[in-house]
Image (cartoon, rainbow, N blue to C red; front, top):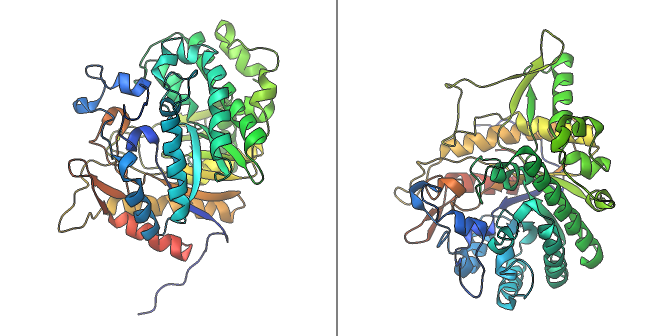
Length: 451
């Protein structure tokens, strides 16, 4: 039987990888001098995490990274986006360095390279040292001041081997959601002015991350951030709805992307904030808007927009019967992978885009007869990648794609129930079993095309 001809190969040298985050996979929460993070503390709050789950032992990656990297290599994965645990390196957030923690990441980096895997290191993925939260957390400039030292330390230590740096992951999640009463650690409900200030202080950390890479990263070092931008999809791909999507996207992402790419907050944004506008100092935006080399986008779902009868952009929301994953927030929207990269390149002039997260969480991934047949995940990834393929064909500068996530792990407030991995993890035995999606993804990587 003749197979249908391939209609599209991804660009030559397209980056295919997987992502994970230290607090979700490492375990060893209080081993070798690691300090407490806000998630370690939050997980001990009654009712905060499903089933009372905690971050230890997670996937015990702290002790099993060699076998995990061997499995990545066997699956054809040559690029791995990981994060470093800030409280493992500076248990108090600043002050005394924990050399044992830094040495762990030295070993981890060396092991990746020995297995032929290129590291993409995220400096911060939500696990703020609890000691800094106790001193004001993201409400205060104490965090960006401490982050400056942390960023300098890790880039100096690893910059000879790590050339791809991501400053911070998903600012909205550890600021707006964490301090706005949406359920992320440390789990506070502050007023709008305080929430806006946490975003500004996070942007300062991004700036310090870029500065550290420029000063200490050495030849070939590149940096950017990973943003879960507000993603919008035009209901119809007609000029009217596309223009409405463009307008809505530009307005919805002013608080984070405008300071980075336009050098400051827009007058429109500050006027909308009113008395709740963030406080900033002279020189803040020179730091925040330091040139980056790429933008990482974490894309899962998206809102739908059309040109309303009144001429304004109108959002449409999925009904209860609209297809969803087991994560209530994650409805299926493959075209998000077309439109988010396209809009960010058009609105902000981004020249290099990487999809640093894309995946889906389900509760029924089980191993039977040695297999985990997650057909739902294969079809999810395939449908999304077809839209990414279309976006690239239409000229969007997407240079790479990272699946979230390599392993089933601690899925934040959903604990160990929600599984996002392409590799199944038995949390009792720590046995890893590649799912059908992992085997499919290996074939996609090898062919550089959707199969």
